[in-house]
Image (cartoon, rainbow over all chains, first blue to last red; front, side, top):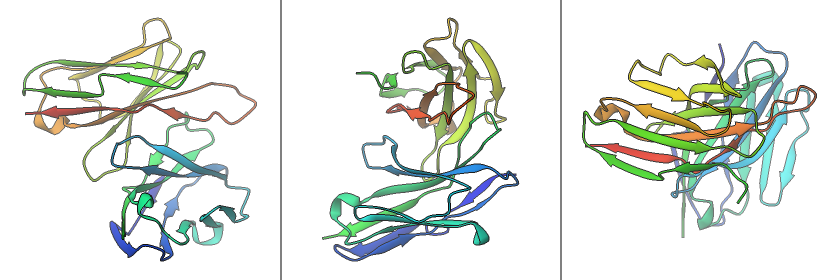
Length: 115
Length: 116
């Protein structure tokens, strides 16, 4: 079975602090994709990143960085120097290569950035 | 605008009424997906189409739910005899179906349903 666990339901940090959102996944597929999405209060899903299971290189995009550890089945997301505009719900998600493309989402972590 | 569109964006209805949502995928995208997101949860897969064929339905899709994609373009999701538990955001996504490369899913803005 495929499963994504985001143990942190809600996190609050003060602006400019760094924050890490945890994601642990389960899958029997050897090839799979991992994602992070942002959902601001308006409700739309904003795609942030996709990683292939064969590519364990960490990635940095501006203030965002992702740490993919296949050995621990984790795909954590760090926001550096957080800003109030980062306040949103963040979803980690998983998709197998041959499972008709449906995406399995975690329950999300609600992030509050306090001014 | 060439993204996935959904209509309406918001729907308020009384329990027992029928509602229908529409999703227009990105042009020429063969695959169309419906997801449901209840409060405090992540989106959950409901069903998907390849062209006009409905290829998979989740157990979440009760008999009161029906989805169609008659011409392989737009899709409708109908809920009959709505219940308060149907209150959720209904998200549509589309993707191409190329076999030789990754098929990105593009999400629409969603239809937020409130059942009173």
